[in-house]
Image (cartoon, rainbow, N blue to C red):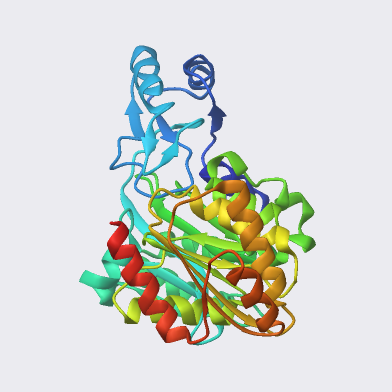
Length: 378
């Protein structure tokens, strides 16, 4: 679950991280009222769940109320990489002496969280890793979180000045604590800034909560902003589907996460590009198949759909019924390739055959077929 910057900063405050004051506005009038209290110069920052806000014109520094009214009017309603700006964060502008990066993320290879810090803050950490990897220090964490001696070592990597190190080390410790206590998959400050008066501030916040841990944090579940998420992902969650939208042209409906990933890999291997990850799970509920088709057919990029079902707990005949019901309801003309094997496979083939549809049994053959159908529909 991705959080907006203003939500992440509230969580930062809850663990004692130094965050400048700021409030959210949904209109230019609200923005002016907030800036009037917090003071000028001020920063207006678009609140969308996507990066690249500054490059898109979604972050502006203003010195006067008339400037804020103009820029807030431009930012509100702006489209940033498919996300419409509905709120802006108003915060006092900071005079920055230096910018650093600090973030905690899961190192999947090491199977443990890792603190990453860099003296090259204010830009994407991916670009730093590519161009100057020596400017990144990685500190793997354990059940203790970030011990003080490791925090001090990381602070020394960021800045040679002792007084700045003393201010940075507690920030890193608290960031690691927030990551662990809130079951985050990412907790990031970029930039972590030092001002000329030697104060340290978290000027941005990016926090992602592990969805699987939300039952332990019902207060955090209420921070989800469905209006800022992909509509297909919202519907999939409500229907009990696991769905992630990608940038390809081949829609995938698969039962089981492992098979879904293998299907996507095979599509890539044969030169295609998957449009999504979609796992209907191990149930035999035809409504899930109907919901899956409804989500995929609304995606204008999808040129063909692959159903790849390995029937164990999932019954192939129920999947076939769900597909036929979806086609009756939606009436799509998108080409569909079906691969069915396993429990009640023969019954499923009979159901599909009665409607003039054929199900393949070989996965490799099905993938090559759906790539060809997608190319024909291009």
